Length: 125
Image 1 (cartoon, rainbow, N blue to C red):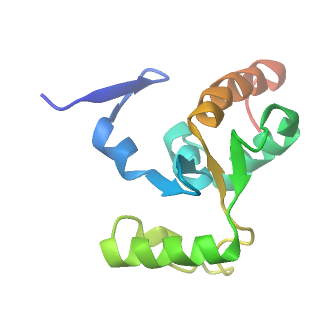
Image 2 (tube, helix red, strand yellow):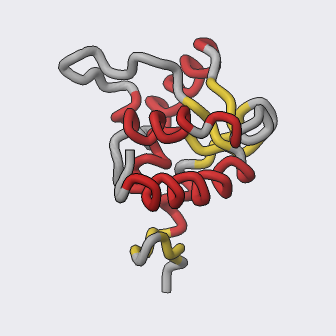
C-alpha cells in the first residue's frame, strides 16, 4: 500500500509531496505554487494570505528565490519533466514574481496561518 498524508480530509500521496521538495540554499523547501496546489487555491491567493501574515515568516521559515536560483530550478524541472507548468507560459505571461520557498518550519506555520485566515474571513484569501 502506498504511503499517503492526510490534509484537510484529503489523502495526498507521499510521492506527490516528495516530488515538491527541493534543496535550495542548503535547505529542503517547498515552493509556493506546490503548496497552493496542495491547499487547493491559486498561487496568487495563497501568497496574499502569506503576505498578510508576513511577520510570522522569518527568513529561516520562508524566502524568495533569486532570479539565478529560479532559472536553475526551471532548468532542473525541464530536464526532469517533473513540473512543466512552472516553465510553460500562461496567456498573460506566467509568473510575475519570483517564487517563495518555505522550509519545514514555514510549512508548519502555514497550517496555522491559513487556518486562522479561514476562521477570520470565513474563507481565504
